[in-house]
Amino acid sequence: MTRRVLLVSPAMTPALRQARFYDGDSIEDLGAARARSAAGSLSAPARVVVSASTRCRETARALGLDGAVEAAALRGVDVGRWRGRTLDEVTGAEPEALGHWLTDPEWAGHGGESVREVCARVAAWLDGAAGGRTVAVVEPEIVRAAVVGALGLPMSAFWRLDVVPLTATQLSGRAERWNLRLGGPLVAPEA
Image 1: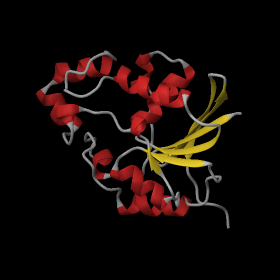
Image 2: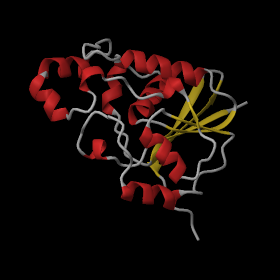
Image 3: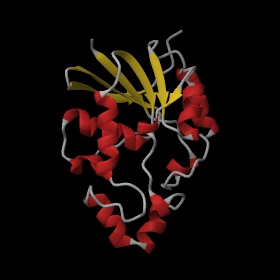
């Protein structure tokens, strides 16, 4: 049976707007309104899963995706001591460390997890994905990891994939062969 996984990135949050490593903030009012306006634009899934974060749960609710289950393998990347800090703050305090994180997929010197670890756990989740259609409201880095794993891209591609809030990226496949439908904005259903 063909597996279809629609990866939806969460609505805008203050952390995303400020280029701050996520620290649990809620989606912005405008982001929630945009998600509500897109409710119903997604085909009915067999299952709905979410990253274990406030912004992903809130986005799923705003999209009208009831019954979402948190998937531990799809949790956001653990950035260790950088959690809640802006990219500028980390760049100023630890420029070499940030450079390592952005260029070495094995590096986890921030006390969290490496890009390779994130990609491995997401690839394992994809390998075990049930047949039928799954909608997954997940962190942007989980979308990146899924695309890297599904297409067998080099780890260096991870940071070259931009994931915009409230976009959908679709993977479909069977027998460990995935196809990618590039992400597009969620739109409100036509009246």
